[in-house]
Image 1 (cartoon, helix red, strand yellow):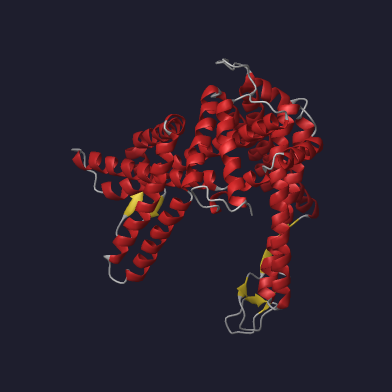
Image 2: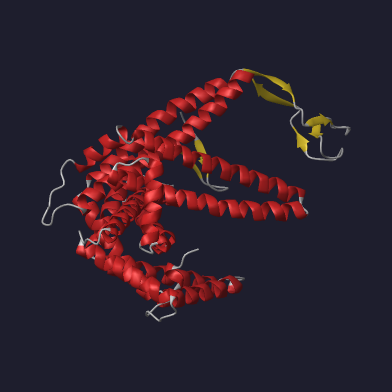
Length: 463
């Protein structure tokens, strides 16, 4: 099918022609994005400190560069000054957090080493995502088919307008209110019930896939962490973890995912209540805002405990509730509960993924433009097509990098629980891991006690 996308007043790109001209570039962009993801993980494994600090320097430099560019344009002086101030503040904050950033680099290096020793973690996560897709596509098709069962009825929220143009307006407005459709589609009663049930099943399935991923990563990392010294091969650990997730621990994963489903639905109900209260205004809006804020903190705590409970379940084989109880006690016994809300690793890696993806997209766009411009074949829309190709390459790169980041942070969480179990039993299964987390604990204790540890306390504070 031919489709046309208008990019500006004078530029029109034929989709079929664009695909024909760019199909090899699109394929190259996909494989290139995968290569960028592999290199991204390799950087954290081999030179984590240089990579982390390079990301931070690049982030500050990018803010400053955009600020200087804004200053050089007409009417951009205010925005430029704001961006330069933000760049200066970012540099100052990163200087205060230099000790925590060093710890982040060491922590990510350990996690990348675990991922290197167990590369099939990536395979298992991709497999789980494909299984999720195979479930969601039919469910979505069934929901669409059920929605087609119904009839056109008069809109209950509309009334006939008294204006000469006719039409309908909303019932909660005057005669000059908002125009609304006079008729709407109303599904049959059974179809509405089915759609609600299918949507619930789809959400539960998504949460189950997330729990299975967390469980699989936790099980594999635990076998790597507690392996005998000198062990260099970990064949079969990923299959074993997947088998346990689909077998003995499947009920625990279903219950854990049900808890997360309930939290997601409750949070969405709270958001709808806040939107309705904001429209109504008055004191009720303030009260609903305070209530939903407190509930959001409780939901975050439940998600936090559930994440570590799933990892504990993968390590010990206990049920979900028993794992949640034991992992809470485990963290409390070792004074480690503040670690779970330490946001620096995710923030640094998210910034890295955006910057690398932007650089990759720009490189692909420039390379394709240079190639098409130098080609003897007529290519009148080389510039526009190069921009589209760059955006596509950026999207592919950021999707793959975010996938790598999520897996790496799952590994960090699993390593953390293994370390806490070591402390609880007064063991040292991985001395290099103990060195990293001992430094984290010392920094937390220094910050809590008001002792200057060489950096700010804000980077690892609990909220």
